[in-house]
Image 1 (tube, rainbow, N blue to C red):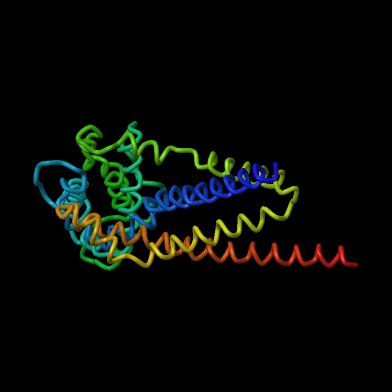
Image 2 (cartoon, one colour):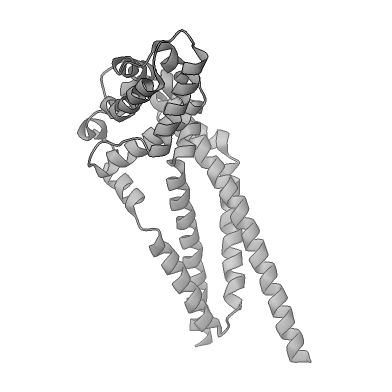
Length: 289
């Protein structure tokens, strides 16, 4: 019975370790496509100057994303100097980060074409007002400009092709499962493993040690992977050379997320192990007394 108990205990520890790895992978993958990280990606990959049809996975060649954005602004009666100021600003990456975040979820889940969030629209209005104040020769009322910018923000979705055109040969079903998977299932399974370890070890505090070890090892794995940017970039990019300018910055951001998470989780593991040692020492001393 002791042998069976040990086997089940170690099996639970292995499952717990794998669950922690999966939680990190799901969390980092979803963090990669949030507005902030997409903004960094857009800046690093110089997305604005890239052919818009490459970005949206279309076969035909066309104009750059910057030109599309510019032309749409002119159609919405936004003065040329103002739209050029907006395109030069650092905040445009935040606007596009929000735009691409919504576009990815539209690509995966379908539905209506995405709209910019309220705070992003306010950022666009703020940028346009600052530019208007700087160009005194532009004869336009603030209310008129605000109205035009609002119209422009709502019409930005016009540059997004229909979902079916963008999907093409992409493995969209796998991406859909990844983005829509309920990560709380993994948390629940991990918690169940810890409860089972409590029962198997006849102890409330011993599973803390096992959890700490799992945290520490998984954290170290992701720290090591996060430090292998050049190697991983070279291996992946060598398989998809035609998409290097799109993929390489994305890999760098993902590995940075892995490194940061790895450091945090490995330190958490060390803390849990030390916490277990302290509790264990207190209990041993109480028995002696």
